[in-house]
Length: 87
Image (cartoon, rainbow, N blue to C red):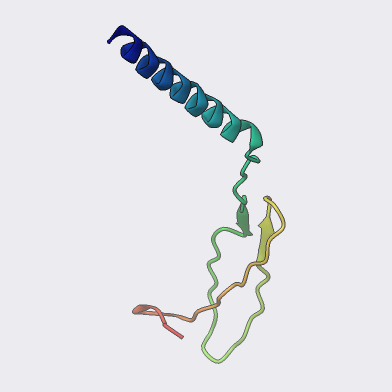
């Protein structure tokens, strides 16, 4: 019975060592993962414009990305008294 118990303990110990080695190798083999950073800024942050009916104006808004290179698609919406108009 002692021999049977020893062989079971050796088998369990061997399996634990194999799992330990596989677990540690997964950290060594895997490559680091980085998330894309997007840091948008809009200038000027607040614009108040008083305009007479029937007149037009041109306003420049600067959008800058302080993060990694990426493609962004701005969406302009008309603002009404009831809120944003869906396009």
